[in-house]
Length: 110
Length: 170
View 1 (cartoon, rainbow over the protein chains, first blue to last red):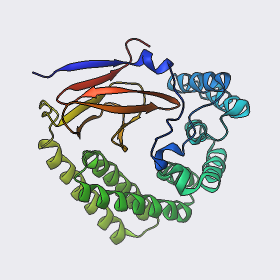
View 2: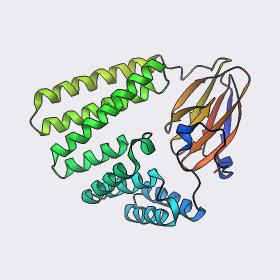
View 3: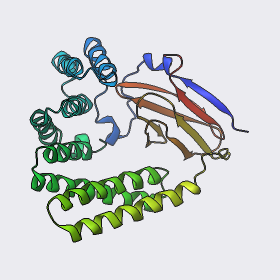
């Protein structure tokens, strides 16, 4: 019989900082951002899932302005939302910006 | 990075620019091909999922090649995609998904709403949404760090158990 334990995601709210002993390859991804930016990013993802793509894009852009510009995922989410909105030129521009600015080392896991 | 190249390739195709799309598809296939080789050498639990994704990458490039009139090259990619898909299915049949982890393994199930990474003994294991992964560990309790997006938590988990990361209490 499988022994199951649920790691409650509520624990995720108790975000801890980068552990000092963290391995280098993984520690390079910045994980601490201003709370307001984090909140807008989460809102953006929710809006994206609901198909409210224009609002999602606005939320992602505000998250960037409020301190998440160095977070690769927010750029990918914004580009994907533009693609789904058939804003292909914007999507291409944003994917290109991602490729040029983050490079392989900062984005290899995406 | 492959998400960005793959996304841009799709956008180029929507605009009818298949040459630029093909250049991006080539990079996506290259990234996946390298990753598959590494995962095979490591006998990684990620292999099945990556084989499926690599199959999709070859298939997407095949469609692009077909749009460019390069039918022979397109067929090669579609055959490669089918081969990878079959390999992934064979691997899935051997999957330990319904087995209890041994006393030197821990099983993680990602029922969270996004991909996350669990780090055990300094080794990161990526779990996409819905993934189930068996991680080899030493017996007893081991420290872990888990990250989903910008969220991160640390603690200990016990060998021989299955841990489900869920969203019920969020």
